[in-house]
Image (cartoon, rainbow, N blue to C red):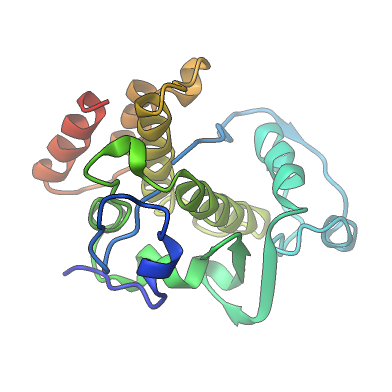
Length: 214
């Protein structure tokens, strides 16, 4: 089952020079937020007063996640009236709103949803990089919100890393390949497949094939 987004893709991706199907969203860049060190962080009120409206709990966060939260706080807006995964407020960054590209509403696995939705233009260099980066921001913010409340964030990781991989592919196609190994296509493809869970082998094969098309 393909997931049909509720926003106007034609307007959102007007910068694409190659037409993109209206039920697909082309995106890409990664912020490597996974790591074992844990650091104390301010009480909930202080965290939210600092602009991180998507932080819903007081759970300790890994150092990398705490850093990303501070980076996202100024540019991610929350709709407190709409709750998404684990009660995290619906978040918007630029032209992307999480509830409109929420994998959990698709009826498929996170990886299958990502493969069907976060699709680059036929000419990869013409893909709307900003749209992918905005989508990654709302996925990363939602994951951070889940972590902060002790929620289950395992299922969001595959589509999040897939977005990051797509961003790396687009940047590479545009002549701006990431130099940090953690943000390179091969590494991110491994992250996607590692966090995909129990999915059909054909989906893993599609990820690996995309990783070679840079």
